Length: 422
View (tube, rainbow, N blue to C red):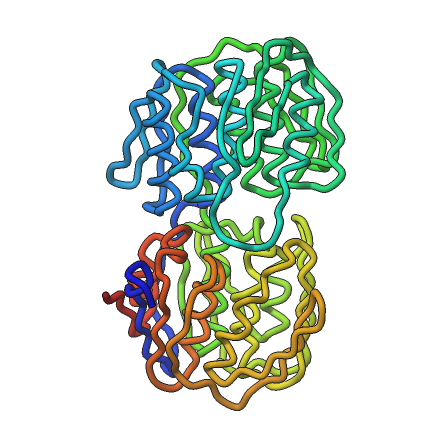
């Protein structure tokens, strides 16, 4: 393994979990919110901001654009008064796919935006054609020059945008760009994720008139007077699901604090079918499981409020040593199953069939050296390691750090033996 991959998380499995863990702010909410800070030409404070490599990369983009941007004690500070360029540096764009969200935000603020195609986890094509179609509907001129995008927004106008699929990124880009139009824009077929609602909440704090009907229609009344904003990010439902899957895998009794169960109804339904017991109290949930899933489980990923694709891998991990034959169907990304070969190193019995996998529950898993192929795959390997006999080393930790703020410490707070090395 090369230098970047020498870091690893070592987990000793086979021990039931117990303890308390706090859910940090949502990665998928904070990144578009940070991009939106360019809109108000003022100070912005983002509370409960997780310390993630993707957050640090986004702050680097903001700094390169001319903003004053930094992270300190769980807060992100961005002063966007003095943006000096409309070009996002190539190096920062290659660090994460969500950086494309700056296309709509910068064009709205400066009238133009220039960037290369984004990087990040390799999960298949994930084309940005819907982003471009939505922005063009608002009157933007977009040129594609090889791997570079050039966006010009000199003649913006309101529009009725209809998304052919509820893409989260396309919804966010369209909303941010529409804030610069004179008049009312509607987006139908919009993504309905809680992270979209959190972005709209932040935009309203800046002074934008943006509203969702909760059924996939968003209305933006652009060109409003703006001011500074102070916002607390919603809890990360994907982190919460990851920790719940860990309890299901090896059994235990854990309390998760700072959690929004109403954001996780599809996940809770599946996990209940897997034997988990949830006891809710104010802003917390107690999770109990025996570590022995029984019965055949079927899971299908869908846009929110369906089962989230970001939870699919950790759900698979929780089923690996359970009784029965289970099936997971992936409908969002075509390359979410690269983790299967890593699970097999631990003794898992998984049969890929097109866009689904069939899992034949194994009696036991064993520790192994495995590779995180992407962010959620890395978390899933950590979940599988909790239920495996012996030690597992999960390499390519840089993927995991994109979305989890010190996952080994979070697991240790739940009674696991987990440490980062290298």
